[in-house]
Length: 145
Image 1: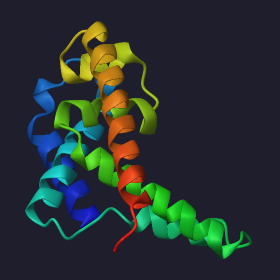
Image 2: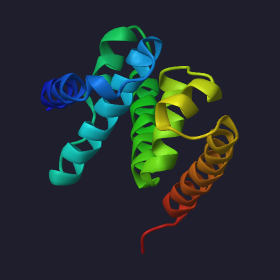
Image 3: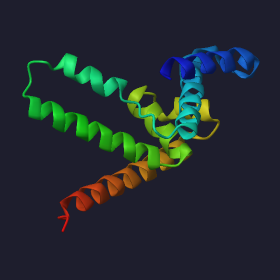
Image 4: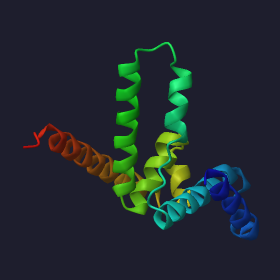
């Protein structure tokens, strides 16, 4: 699944290379394309979750307490689920900022919007994520009768 998204992203990038205005932004440009392809694939098959990174945690922290590993995996799944509930414009900004560590200006250039618009989307996305995660937490706190 991941390999398919990456392959489709590079095919799309190759076919649209003439649209890239600044070669220095190639990495971020391809990342956005890959992100969109992955989102499309997840929408097509909603049973697939991006869990390959989560499974790698066990190998990375094999000397940790198993309970910590379970909690860490659960937290990552909660964040992934919350991210998937964001609209695409918010999700793109969060991924480019946190996962690719791009400055707001570069994100704006990649997405074709101003840095101010990126900051606005980013802060709205963070607030929405916070509310989604708090909602999940409060729903988990309810006892099943």
